[in-house]
Image 1 (tube, rainbow, N blue to C red):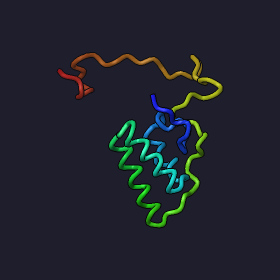
Image 2: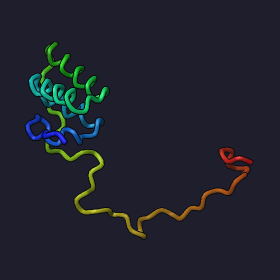
Image 3: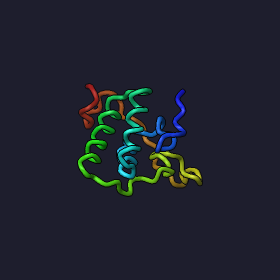
Length: 110
């Protein structure tokens, strides 16, 4: 397991790819270069390397860091702090799957 505590994004190795691009917008060129070096040495995931290279190229072409997601913002899909608000009173109606060969459901074989 790699030590990613010195990286510009906390818990970088566990960030979902969907939030990484937005988080990169807040980083400057040396920070993105450090992430690229770390990625190539550890995970070497092609989509992540391409994303980092593209951002690094934009920064070298004059792009400025902007206010992306804060480094401490929880990842998408994190559990809500108060737990789920679903209860039997708020659940949808019970449904049974259609039987095989249902003529009103053409996706089912006849």
